Length: 188
Image (tube, rainbow, N blue to C red; front, side, top):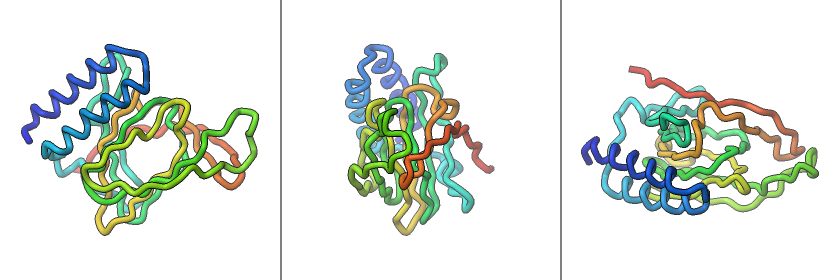
């Protein structure tokens, strides 16, 4: 697929995000667009699919000028896992390569601070599959690369995900710390 298909995807997501504030409508429509992008054979540049042995990487593909949404390539090396975390916004994730294992938790109520997180299910995602990974009422999970190759995802988030203050949780105790993930730059 030619690079202009990515530009068309960016333009279409911009229209969706600019057309409604309903995050459930946004995520449903963005999921359809992302499914079509993946099914159409879009190819990420090689430097945006390289894993690090130290931690997962998040490469920016597009950040809307008004920071209303962002597009990222997220890469985990085999066996890497994120901490249990929130997003504090909506998000849609599609698997580009590898196998992603997602472990979801119920979002704890403020009154439940200090209680263990409640598991809410697990899923395995393979190339071409797309999921609504989060809405503001349901956005706590951990992700692991479980295949025989690095896992690469294409993610779309409400806001600039590299600058949003998010929560990291200890699932056993419910203890919460805030973090900002930042963005990574590809090695050339």
